[in-house]
Amino acid sequence: MAEYEMSEKSKKYLAKNKSIKNALLKKIRYCLEDHLLDALKECDKHELKGDLKGLWRLKVPYRRVVVYELVGVRPNRHAKIYFIKTEEEYHNWLNSA
Image 1 (cartoon, helix red, strand yellow):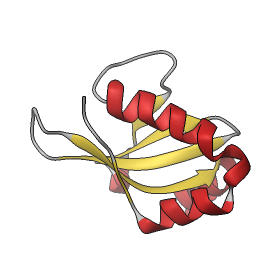
Image 2 (tube, rainbow, N blue to C red):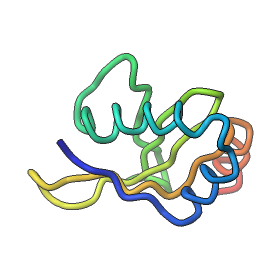
Image 3 (cartoon, rainbow, N blue to C red):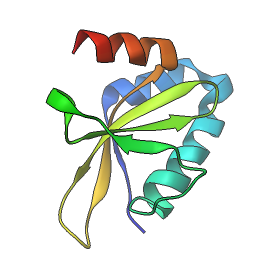
Image 4 (cartoon, rainbow, N blue to C red):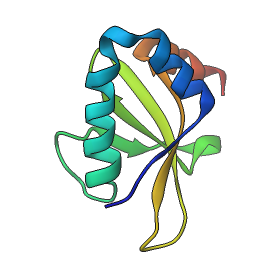
């Protein structure tokens, strides 16, 4: 099982959004720890394209998106989470990149 690493920005986001924190962390643990390299229908994740290649996105509950990168080498690969945004904020960020 891989562990994930979370940026300060992500930790602050979760601290501000206490009502949804547990649901988001449950999905993050399931998809980015237990099944990091598995293609599962319930883990809606994919690699970004273009200038953002190397970054990945994971859709989590409450219309939120986690942007992360795979770091390390096998068998020690893990996810480094950069930020968590609403879907609208995520799409605005994509369009500005």
